[in-house]
Length: 317
Length: 93
Image (cartoon, rainbow over all chains, first blue to last red; front, side):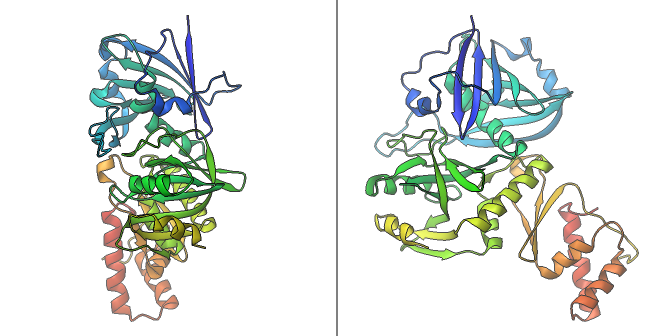
């Protein structure tokens, strides 16, 4: 019997099929349930089938990865599913290693700790087999979302000229979308907390936002990959029309300055998760960012950690 | 530097022009290497545009001299430094 789960992230529909039902995750389901479709969609953009093995060498020999052409490797920060300090709302950052390689006509993506996820995808990234290494022969939706899906989405967005993933908080203020991008510790989660507490807004996410262009309009989308702050966590498939882009940092008083396109590019490019191993993708990402910069007001925003920042950001023209 | 030498842009870098300047984005194989993007000012951006696999360094120098009012010795020194920098980040071969 085949079990299917459908996820929708920034308009991209991911179908996950397995001979086994995923484990029930009462404890963590709130983090991703808003991205799970209740009904079967008419079409699927990325079609994944799950296989589970106790040891990876039984199915995709590790040797496979030694004979493939490696394209890139890296680390991406993930937040573990267990809250570490409830009072401080602090999570330990955890690095997940990943590798991307080519083998014959396939793209291989290996991720997670100890390389316990291996994904063999068609070159267009639309179809793939996922091998989960689990001695219990079970799988969970969190294995997909928090194992390798982020890297796959980063690559898929670029390859199909759809958009990009930004290290940023995203706010939906009535109909307007504000992007607060920054490097680690710049204040993205703090921004999420302030706007959640003092403004009637929807916090799309406090760490990872996808920007897409639909027609002539730029939108920001929430994602299931959050940062430190999760009490507000109502991240969902909703989107907002992008009105302002802020490159944020902590300051003793609120001060925003309009930034030239060149300086905006230098600032915001630091905050993009780019497929830096693929020239076409990098070309697209840089062009997409430039287009956003030329169409959306960009500010370098030193902000003070208090409620005044809400009106200050809203009033900026 | 040999002024007959011809350089061309590497396929290991993506370049984007923004307001007369050029941003260079090198391709990498590891996220550990992902530290920099490079910006060429207007003069360097013009030189970058002339590095096309056809112009040698003497051609580039002459064209830059025509376009910018710079003393030749100074221009030669700056051009050599630019070529050295671009080679070090694998932007040209």
